[in-house]
Image (tube, rainbow over all chains, first blue to last red; front, side, top):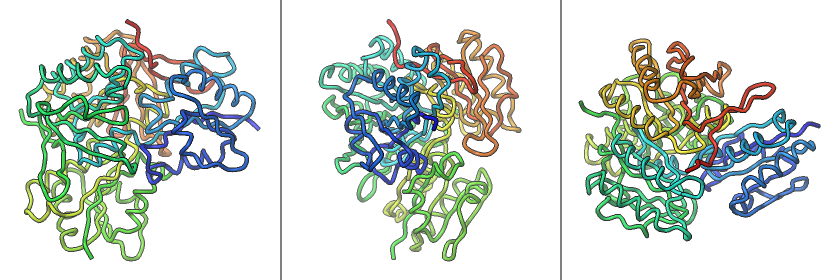
Length: 250
Length: 250
């Protein structure tokens, strides 16, 4: 029996947002690897071995998955959200590129999932309904100067922006600087969504403005969406609707 | 019985990419509205009325959905991909904002789906594995000058870029200009993915470079993904892997 690696997105948390393609892959797998809280979302069953590992060991985990597939195992690498957005897909391909030649000819596929920014956008309305950009605010793997340059150019392009990993305990100053940069580039009334733990029991949505936003509104479970200059709010009973219209005038 | 509107994403085409949340909404609906080819993807059943309409009548369709919900119907508005990415969610909220007051208090929700760029990225590898932007190249609803400005700033920010609606029969010149702008801003070897009709029987993937890309490589069923300067290719037997590594050096 020949092995494979499927790099699968579990979506933001709710089981109703896991695609049938991913559920089928999990049903066929012999082994699941991933970060501890994501592996915890996979149901145990006979014939399936769960390999949970800590954060920041993405390359070790990838090599483990590829090695098991080379030995004939059917391995699902699980990510939260979509595996292609700041998640395990790039890590696995880095391991393939730098690994033994025979890993290149393994059957490897990526199974998309509902990524956190689109789940967050859906819960709030449609703030990403027009052109937007997606930035990982962690400077773990890239220089802060590049993040700052991207923030300024994105603001000048009037993109809506979605931020992943806005604020970690070890580097809380990044998001402080992000808000400072955005205040230099955008008007004070610019709308910002803080969407925490979307689709889980811990979900909290908070719509604010650049003038009123504080760094403490975000943590590592939060997706931050900054509207474009065109993003609007519809007030109503219950939660307001945040959305970006399709039309931009001359 | 109180009505509702659920604006639902059907994903890129394959039924295995439709979330259970969306399938459940369709199972509970009394009415489905949408563009003809998307409504055609919904199975007929007793008690469900399908309302298929042509392209470019998004506001009429939205008003129809909201009106039916106000009358107590359970209405699913279907989009391809994700409804919040260049699809029906913003159109429905435009209709809410400009419609009668009682529409604001309807139960309206957005059910995310697998958007085309993430399905395309998954099929090719992980070209959107690092910071990226998403641009609708149609100048139907925005001035061409804004598209050009966004393209130049996105290239200067070294974002990977995903383009929706790259080329229509009525305005083929936009994508010609897009390639010209990108050739001014990026190096000739910059990798480009043309992903047509992903996850359907018509799927075709084509990886090229800025120097070799031609406008005819795209049509309205194509998602175009332009890599960042860091995007790489892994050659192997069968399809190559296109991906953007997680790490960016100083």
